[in-house]
Amino acid sequence: MNQDERNATLADTAFIFPGQGSQESGMGKAFYEAWPEMQTAFDRLDSALDIDLYELCFRRETEELTRPRNAQPALLAAGYATYAGLTSRFAVMPAYVAGHSLGHFTALAAAGVASPTDLVDVVRRRGRFMERAEREAGPGTMLAVLLADPDIVADACRDRDDVSVALYNGPRQTVISGTTEGVEAVQATLSDSATVRFRELQVGAAFHSPVMAPAVDRLEEVFTEISLEEATIPIVSDVSGKVYTDPTVARQDLTSQITASVDWVSVVEELQQRGVTRYVEFPPAGVLTSLVDRMHSDTECYTLETPADAQELFT
Image (cartoon, rainbow, N blue to C red):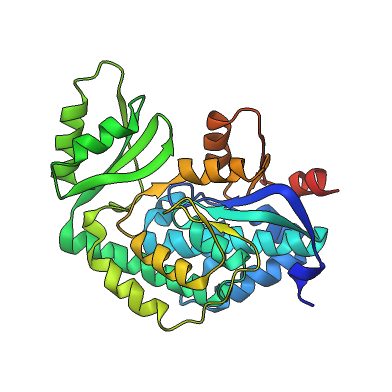
């Protein structure tokens, strides 16, 4: 009997994992210092890479974490190791897991689809592939479009092949991504609306856009090198918005996700339909629960920022 089989399932609860853009220096450090189980899981991931994850997560400036090759393994390590520590200490598991962009990989690790040490190496390489794609097909940028209908934003992108909707974060919060020229052109089109607002994102590359196309085949090749298993916890895909446990779906979604839109709205709606009323976000926590709360203010949203948060929630 494995650890997941011994844990009590929280029938109304989803554990959610953030993606790139939410990274911050010190993410997960409080858990590392307080929970030996988290420390063991984190150190195992650290030893699997050619970089010092402890230094990167807990001591370096946040600016260095904007580089995809650094941010992605650091985010996965902080989120997964905290999850490993929590499930071990409190003997609980969620009904569902989900992640936003890079967080989808953390959800895979939590659900046992692949070895966490394999996945932290995959996302380290994924970050390198994205940086290389940016050099080959960029430069690019990402722009949050606020207070505009997502369909109108998608229509504005449709006439160009160098920009697309990257993130559906909320009913009135969409992110476009692509070449700098393409994003500026779409912004100009959308600027005719009196209500629309814009905010440039500092994420290190034009994720989930045509700029990332050169990275797709490279990531597909990496996935052939690792073993994928049936998920022990149902995962909600941030590509399709559907629940799955089949590892072939994971492989397909996580490669197409490089250029496809992340649909967080559909993730939350699927979870709501399945009876989830409580969301617990893992470090670096805050972004996703804020998005959930804006869509469904009647849900319970919790951020795990310190061990005291977990103690209050699970005892």
